[in-house]
Structure formats: C-alpha cells, structure tokens
Length: 178
Image 1: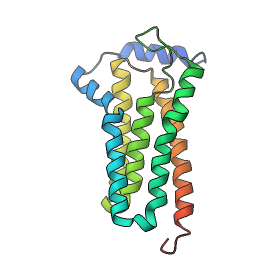
Image 2: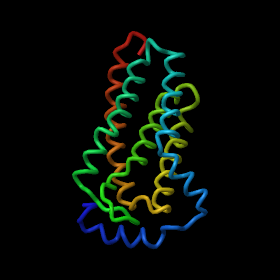
Image 3: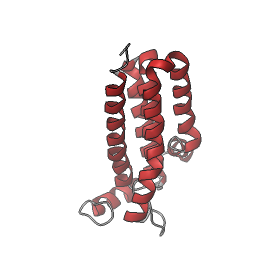
C-alpha cells in the first residue's frame, strides 16, 4: 500500500508540502529520538531498574521488552528490502517502514511498561507516546521519511508491543506473587 497503493499520492502530496518546516535544530533532535543512541539507553535503564527492584517477579517482563526490541530490526529490515519504497528526498529505496520510528516506539513504550508500576502508570505511557510521536514528526519534517513510513511503523510496533504485553502479563500472572 505504501509503495504503490492508493494512499501513495496523498502521502507524497502531504510530505512535499510540509518537508522543511520547523526549526532545523528542533526537527533534527526530534528525528534523532528514534536513533539507537537515544532510545536504547532508555530501555536499558528501565530494564536495569526493574531488575534491581523486582528481578524475581518481573524478569519475564524485562525479557519480553528486550526480545521485542530485538524483533524490531529482524522485522523492519526485511520489510524495507521487500517493499523497497523510495525516500522523499532521495532516489534510494528501503524507507518503508521507518526503523527510527520503530526503535523509538518499542524502546520508549517498553520502558513505560517496565517503569509504570514505579513511577506512575498515568503518565509513563503518555510520555512514551509523545516521544514516539515527536520522533515521527521530526522524521517527516526533515524529509527522512514519508508519513506512511512512520504510520506503518506505529502499526507494526503497536502489534509487537501488544503481543509482548499480553505474553508477559499472562506469564507474570502465574508467578506466586502475580
């Protein structure tokens, strides 16, 4: 759908109207929120903190978050090659789905799922979703990705996080303290 479907022309019209808007330093920062250098340390810190607090009862949740993050390149890289969509400001292909968006969503939302019981469930996930949304906005405004590249990553990673959450919740409910 993103490479040749009916939404492609709408996607391209939107991108070409908004690319380059916003202060470059801000849009660069927002786009960088999805890089491994920014996002992975957040997930690692959340996993470390969770294991330090409740290693015995929450180790499967930490393992689930780590495996979900490991699934991102395992899924995104082949999809990029298979779909081979050209980027907004380049002739090169392999832009769908957005790896930076996928990394941001899984890292930040995974960290929110792990840290929620300690820092407050009411604001942990909204903060993670704002960081993920900001990453997508930065990538589109900088011209690194089409809007559908970002939306496709949100859908893919939403499914990954849903599977992770349901599997780890089911597993942790079998523990003596669960």
